[in-house]
Image (cartoon, rainbow, N blue to C red):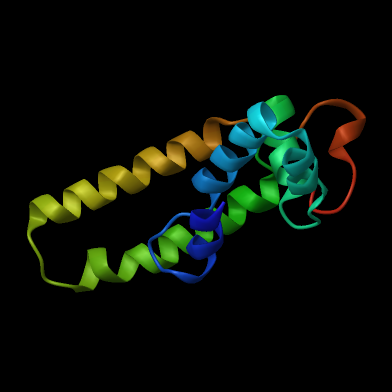
Length: 118
């Protein structure tokens, strides 16, 4: 959980994987902490979407895609470093975006309503 919180403030340290890992671990070790995490207004609904449906809300997909493209376009297009590194970075970005956009966009049924849902 600490790594997820640090990921909010430290560039290149991912928040989401550590948050999902914390939820998975809490679900198996501490029902109280798992309920607390799911009750958080910012991340709780997104974690529930993932745990119940392996879904990522459309707004989250769009925001992540925009940030990834904007933040990585400049170095890939305008900085001078090895073409192999640029290709590896572009391939990594493509893999992340492929994974992101092949997940369902909204949980099925009545759980899809509410703030932030697509």
